[in-house]
Amino acid sequence: MPYVEQPEDRISPAERAVCYYTLPRAATPVSAGMLAVYAVLLAEAAAVLCYGAAADNDGWVRAGGWALGLLAVGGLAWFFLIALAKDVRRRRLLAAARTQTAAQDSEDLPDPFAGHALLKRPLRPAGALFACSDNDGLIHCFVDVRRPRAFWRVTSSLDEPLFDLMSLQGPRSFFLTPWSAAQPGRIGLFLQNEKRFEIRQGFGWRGPVTHVLPRGEGETYVIRQGGVFHKDRLVGRVYTLRRTLYLDIEREHLADGVLGTFIAAR
Image (cartoon, rainbow, N blue to C red; front, side):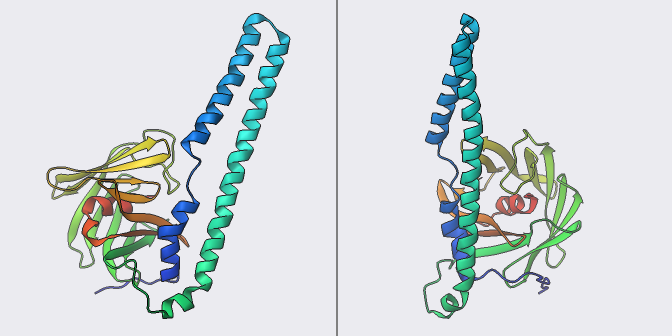
């Protein structure tokens, strides 16, 4: 079986556990309740400003203007500090995992990832052709990007055709995915010119949401905040580490639609 060269070191069991279990909790976005309170305060400040302008009352106008300005500046500073604190915590957790690698690898502990498949690919491929491989470098499939963000041809490690991915709709909004690039709004997965899955991008209260919808027989999956869900149960995660994108998922849920979403992610 062909192997891919690995310029970066393999992800260790400790790092894998941190990326799968710990970091998602540390990187939880601002709660909907906090956003709602902030929105109410902004609305009240705007209402005071509008009332002052309508009543031709300079005092109310100044009060509303100052409140609106302070809330805007304070909100930006608040979000920046939260993002900075999360990034610092993420770096510390990963650094701790790297130092614990030798100790954890030598212990005879149950494998929390038994029954999982771990695939990886370059986060930013250098060319039009890249490989998806396991943690040891064993190639799972090759991806030929015929048109960036528009058409992908996926073949097996033995150069046998698996499926094609084709963009059916451009990005629906200016929102970015968790992988920092605008995704096509809809992507079709075709096997021998027959659509088997449709990958739809959306947006929810907590950020971008991807729906993996089968055509005919198959299972539906939802990907949000890096988690892969099947019938509201977490079955896998997509995460980045050292310029590499990982798909860590239960083997029975490594469907073509999920793999296609992982391949097309930017």
